[in-house]
Amino acid sequence: MQPVFVDFSTAVPRAGNAVVSTERAGFARDHLALDAGATVTVEFEVPPEGVTDELTVKVRALVSKLGARPGFAPLDVAVNSKAIAGDYRIPGGGDIPQQFVLAVPAELLVPGETNSLTLRTSADARSHLWLYRVLAEPVWDRDGAERAWLADSAGRSLLTYRTDRRAPGAQEWEPAAPWRLHLDSGEGAMPARIDWRVRSGAEASVEFALELTTFYGHTRDADGRWYELRGTLTDRRAFPGDCDPAATRTFSTEAGWGGRWHPGGPLTIHLAVGEETPFERIAWTDQRACSASIGLSGDGSSFLGWSQRVNEGPVGYRGESTEAGAAAGDRPEPGPLSEELDRFGRAVADLADAAVKSLGSFLRRL
Image (tube, rainbow, N blue to C red; front, side, top):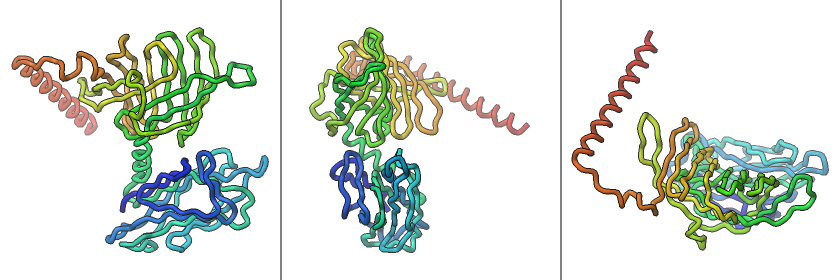
């Protein structure tokens, strides 16, 4: 079975392998707001061979507060009209969205047909239920729906934000330069955090809301004055769209580990934040928890830094602009001697790696 996702952060929900219908619910900024007795139905296909063991369903939601007190909007969840959760109270007090996980036994699913997942708020709910996302995946395809959702989200990766800043102690926010950004390091995930610094000394560090509708952080201008900084999403589209090519850099990259450098995937960065001097440092973390930090050369044609993929250790990270004269296509072809030396170097490195592994195995047996 294909992973299923529905994202309610836009007026028209983004869905993968699903069809969505609603009753007594309406879009509100970055979520679907459910009244008392509201219903959300997600229809999805189950293949003829069915699902092995069970289906995993993940729901991200929040119950709005009743003044200063926790809200009240119990939720019923059913698959093909058979209940899998009843009068479920979402915890958290209405401050932040929560994710809860449910198991759907395979016998509740109908192979080879359209199946339905229904979420219904209680008729006596006294506050709203805010629904952000619904994911469903076979139990052995762990996080498959989340990966599909992230990949779909990355398909509209050019983000434009209206920004405001506020000086320490000030009451009012003042307009600041708009931001437009796109970052693709090959992980298929949107940014969760971005830091940057330009050569004038201006810098910023911001964290994005999961739905990418807002960000919050701080910034310093070239004169050393610090400000709060906030952003509100005003446009989102596929890259490159109509972005300025002059603000875009694409690099061929390498990862450094095991005593040598290994070819990596391309890195593309578009970062237009209203600064006139070149960037000297950019760092980021994406929504999969992969992270990197790079320091750029004076002309921006190369970088050196580190990167870390989720659940892996940090490695070296370097790159060269594909527009620079040092791009791979402009380099002279290596001669026979350099090819032999390169093969010899790789052979020595492989022998060293094997020796280290053998020594480690020997020591573990002691």
